[in-house]
Amino acid sequence: MPAHLRRGRPAQLAAECPRSRAQPGARCTSPRGRLLADPHPSRLDTATSKEPESWPYHPPQPQ
Image 1 (cartoon, rainbow, N blue to C red):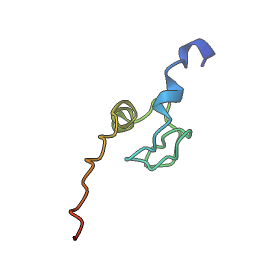
Image 2 (image 1 turned 30 degrees about the vertical axis):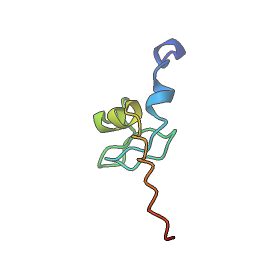
Image 3 (image 1 turned 180 degrees about the horizontal axis):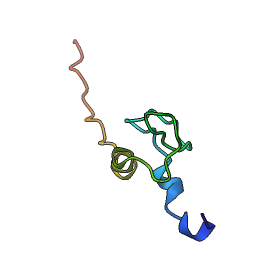
């Protein structure tokens, strides 16, 4: 595939795939072990969503 068609892929491959367990930077695989041309949709959702910031809970300190 030409490089100009791959522009969005590095961001899509930055997250681990929750379906095929592909590591960040690696392509997704099918159940038979074949490399997929496009990432799984769940991986795209993971890559585009932002992690929610944790709520800064501070337990009360004993006095």
